[in-house]
Length: 243
Image (cartoon, rainbow, N blue to C red):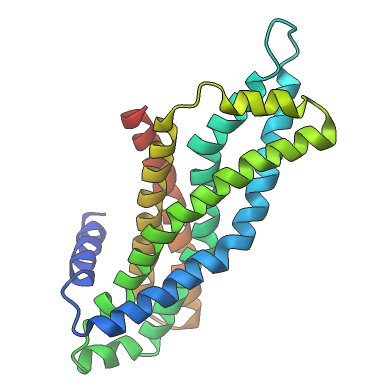
């Protein structure tokens, strides 16, 4: 474990060395941002709307007591989406979609000796391959989480219109009632940390791939699994420290 941690830290250190040519790195960052952000927008949108709708329906179902105002369903759904569902569920999905892509791309370059060719040409391979992915992830994952929060709340409103479990007016009242900006800050900190974990862990697994095509698939699987585990651990730590 300590050997793997040391290799991981040294790889991150190499990844953020001064680039040889800034314009080449900038082009890679832009390409990765499009891949992470635009490429993941569809699946994040679908998941967010349905999770927001399901959460609202389930909360409304639990509010069977006439002493509890129905608008509280909007508050609970809002805070659940902001604090947990949007950052955590979205990041777990991104670990599967984006993280596996990072690990398999870098792993394929390793087993086909493309990384060795870059190093022979004097290119800092970790910096060229990994730092754009990390920068793109820590930039785009928070943006995707913000979109996910908005769509989750919208999904709850749609659920109110379709099912009639609570009235849309009560839902809007609950969403607006008692809003605390700290929840948004917590969600953005989670998104930033989760984006870093996804990109760095999956890139690490791909960079140290050995063997052939079978090992590339195994590296991608390990990257996704380790990313998900560390996302859940970081979620617990950030929640306990900030709330």
